[in-house]
Image 1 (cartoon, rainbow, N blue to C red):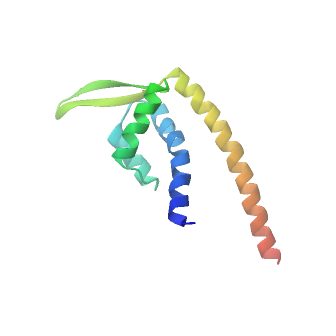
Image 2: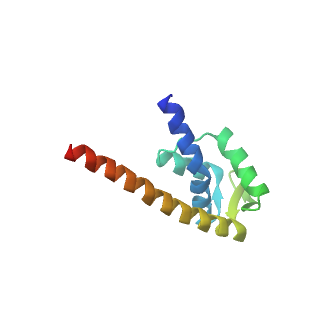
Image 3: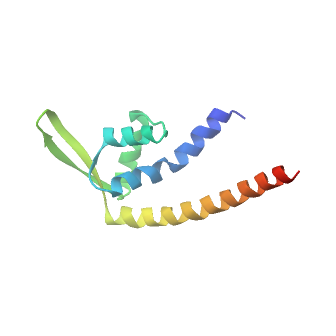
Length: 116
């Protein structure tokens, strides 16, 4: 098994969660999402982000609005819907449970290594 492929799959699994979190803070432009994800070392490209945003919109989890720009064409800003907030709340609970479970396993493994 290729470690890079496994890492990509893990990141893909949490990308939707991270995007919804970013959008839940308020209106956000796609390039700002890309910048934040990249800063957090979640590497994503426009070719991945835009289809995901479309899928989330089609699922009713987010909406967008066009805002005129003084320096060019109008910009599309994304906002989370009430349904999206409810979905994010469920995802947050799942993340906390999974994170605690994984950390329990990792810490037990580390404890066994240090006691051996």
